[in-house]
Length: 174
Image (cartoon, rainbow, N blue to C red; front, top):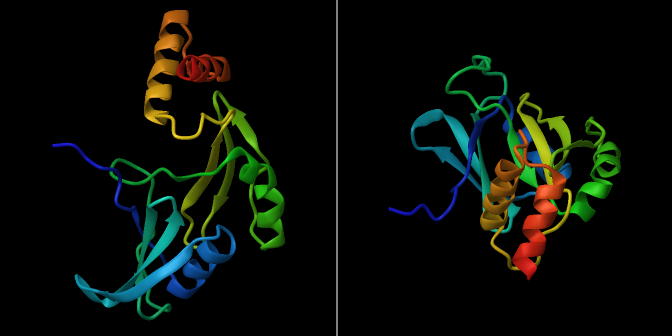
């Protein structure tokens, strides 16, 4: 069996209207449809388009006043949702989010990634993620990351860093 990709993460939220508005307004996603949850008549689900064939499913109560159990970080929970952006988009993300009334961290650079952290209305931690350098259009990004990891291992480095990514991209272009 070969997986074609991730279909969508499903996130339980407190208030559907507020959460859909957040993902549309702050992150530019588009609501594809909303329907009753076949597994729970007291909840609905909304499928959003995040672009590039990626989708996000939100599941929440029909009545926003319904009390839901709070999540706890631990085995079986989701640590965060990483949304991939181009470097150009990430360059303007902090200011765009501020204009939309969304609090976010300033950009953090870690290894080969540039990150901006924020939370959705239900407290889901989101990272907006871009690579420190863009791979060539149409390149196999998984193969570039595999090569960068091999370069890291050969150098005896503990983490994949920007220089490993740069070399892997250069080799892919050669």
